[in-house]
Length: 321
Ligand SMILES: Cc1cc2nc3c(=O)[nH]c(=O)nc-3n(C[C@H](O)[C@H](O)[C@H](O)COP(=O)(O)O)c2cc1C
Image 1: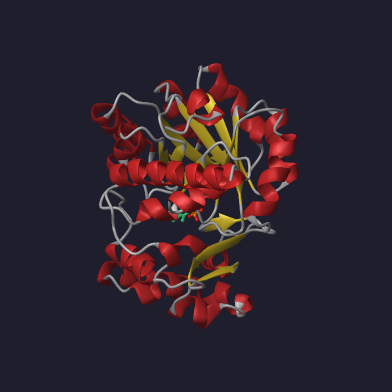
Image 2 (image 1 turned 90 degrees about the horizontal axis):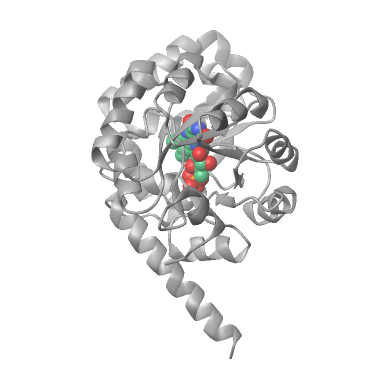
């Protein structure tokens, strides 16, 4: 067991949180498996219709009586879904991007615990100001929308302004050694996305899972082009994913995309139906180069926790001579 301030606050056995990821990547099966194994599973609500969110929450509750969470990207929040999750008395609300004052207080008023993912010290300070319970420091190694700073630099800086709150580390954590490294840097646990995409439970497309398994170190690229294609750019924010034909074709041609957006998106949707990983958005972190197989989510939680514990024990033995 690796007890931390996060395992205590979140009432979980292992300091492992399956990161909030949008509709196409998380579902009740994944969340239920992670929470049931003593980690914390989180249902992504970005792009998820309200009725589906409520149904998935009911399914999670049928799978496990352990804590679980929901995730909202505040800048793109669907307020109806947020209200429905408040009414469902979901135990943990997690947020990313946007004004924490809009969401943290209301979630806490229901008795829920709140977690805010941040990529800069200024974002961490705003979340603390809004009264958040737990922070996630996300490093540039992460998959999906990322900030500009390496995990080893942003994590201690966020801990310094966290006022004693637990801080989780995100970005490139995929196994026991990387969890142990994050804990050594002062994290209270890991917030892991890409590793949990390569599970049988994740609804990520088979071609996406295969691309993660096939990816070598250095296979990802951080670029603003995906948001240009999706038509919702955020200043200063980029997306990390596995390089493929789409990124090779469009990076550096931002000005041309808006006029061709419908065509480009139609081609991506077609490739999704055809299972063609070379023409779809393959969001994933730098850790994908170290993932070589699809593993059941519950096994991952138990094995990564046990491996990290072994790594830290060996480190302690080495330090004490
Ligand atoms: C496919 C994918 C989708 C994501 N969607 C969201 C999201 O909807 N909300 C959010 O807060 N973070 C999202 N993220 C970022 C994760 O919360 C987390 O920061 C990231 O996965 C951590 O890095 P890792 O993938 O290297 O473990 C997403 C990440 C990925 C890979």
